[in-house]
Amino acid sequence: MSEGTQPDGDDAQTESAESRPIRLDDPNEDAADGEQTGSEEAPTEPEPAEPAEPTDDPEAAAAGGTPAAVGVKLGSTRTVVATPGAGGVETVDALTCLATYEDVLTGEEKLLYGEQAASEYPESVWYMLRSGLPEDDESAGLAETFFRTFVESNGVPADSVVVYAIPTIDNDRGLQNLTSVVEAAPVGSAGIRSYPEALCGSIPALGDGLEAVEQTFVGVNLGSTNLEASAYRRGSQLQRYATGGVTGNEVDRRIVTYVEDETQGRVNIDAQTAREYKEAHADFVDYEPFSDVVQQPGGGTHEFTIETAVMDAVDETSTRRSTSSRTRFSPTSRTTT
Image (cartoon, rainbow, N blue to C red; front, side, top):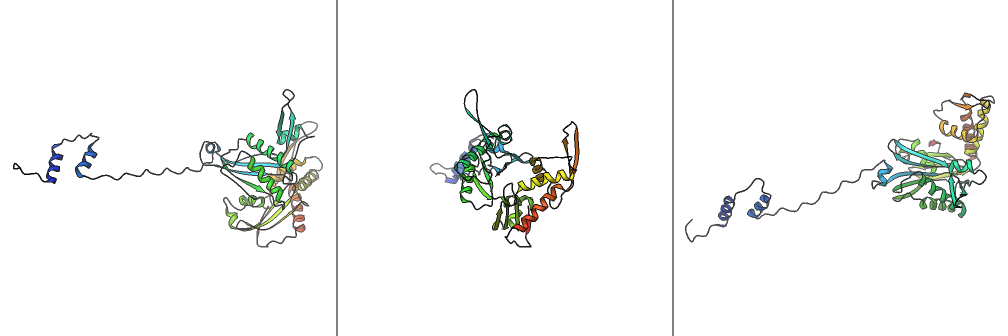
């Protein structure tokens, strides 16, 4: 390079780069290269966080995961809550009743609910949903206290989406009161919604998922105090029918009588046991005889088998149901009970 001659810009940059030693572990190497070439790297956008996976663990949901799915049925006789668990759906239930008593030491009023209330305070226990819905302010207040106590005692997660079943009854005030009862409880912070009980009961009967909402069918719910029948087309209710003339309580009483007849008087069961037989074994398609064991008054046990008592009672009531209803449904529709 001759004196007084200015080096070309590219040559100067090349000379500078070649004359500077570079360490392999130099943390500024990339920055130095950027200065030499005059290029700048565009800033990279942070990768979006992975969405939270749905969880079937109520404890994980309560800890900040996906809200748990909770199903609620506030029945006239029993209340049932279903939540997802590690082994599948887990249910807790109790008699829909409430009793209060005074603590003899502190004078404080305390509450009992469910079977404990019914057995310990039979003379003063309240069954606030005997008609199927909380009809007035008093029954609504009692139902609210009962349901709040029930969900708190059973650890139902507050961070949840609640779906609750409503009866097919033309009673706007009662339905509004029921909504208030559910919304006042410490559950459903992520959402609360109601669906007809006959539709809720038909979903598991017509498939493993939600196939029922894509079908046309008739759903029948034989409740303790009311019989309900509704026609559904793709999840929308077309017609409905409800009557108190044929009830689940009547079926239970028939089962009590028919079990005594079938066992030739050797077995006498109560209405609660009859209800358990009905709920566990009654099936219009795949009924199978079952056995049970009772304690003998004089000691010992007696095993017996029920062949016809349960289904005879259910079949007779179903016949009365179909002849008493004036609502016409399509003969091609599927029926679930």
